[in-house]
Image (cartoon, rainbow, N blue to C red; front, side, top):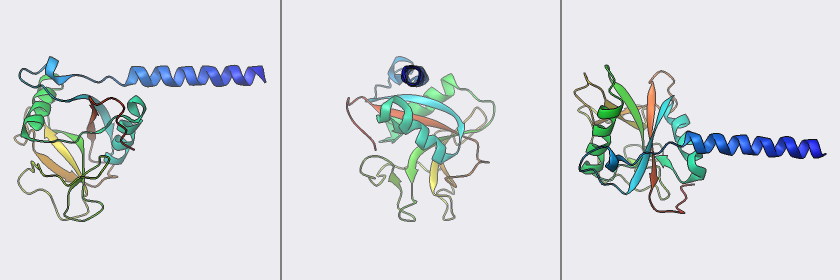
Length: 176
């Protein structure tokens, strides 16, 4: 019995230590001149849009999510940060928290109230009317669409999506 409790306790310690170390949120205002935002961000490795959404929610005990881009200023700051810190030589796509899964053609943020996206920054030809129900942001040295958004199938394993997670600076805010 004591051994089971000890193993369980060690498992919890390892789990929470790993989670705390994994949540490497950055304050963009420290790195990009003129970008003072009300959130911190975390940039995640490759996954599907759905897996990125789940990973963002799992970080920092549920206070984070895929980024909700409120306006052009925030969009530009995110694009600048990506280009300055993750300068890919080719085009890269970053999942953002926007989807039209619930109502086709009505793009809503995956936040606590599924608010309609009043600010949108689509690349020419996007969004598509196909089964691509989730959004991403383009970035890359050779990418003329850096900062613009495109669409992808939410569960696509071939899209090669990184992710931008957001943690609003409002302590105690839960997104699930």
